[in-house]
Image 1 (cartoon, one colour):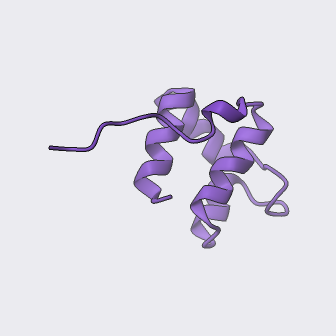
Image 2 (cartoon, rainbow, N blue to C red):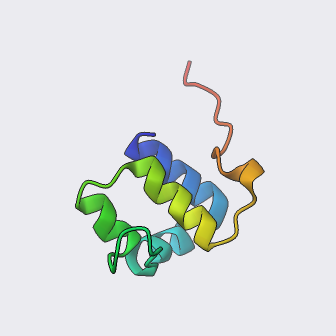
Length: 73
């Protein structure tokens, strides 16, 4: 997962403002005491961060693949 895909999935699932709030403030537990944003900055795998946020927010597994965005022409 690319970082751009992460943000697209976050925005789609949570809305832009709440997605930013989660990344800044949520401490998923998978990364010690780091927030999701700090984990990303420290080089954590983007998909791992996405899945950790999904687990913490009880996102159904069917939606954890992210949005279906058609490819650019």
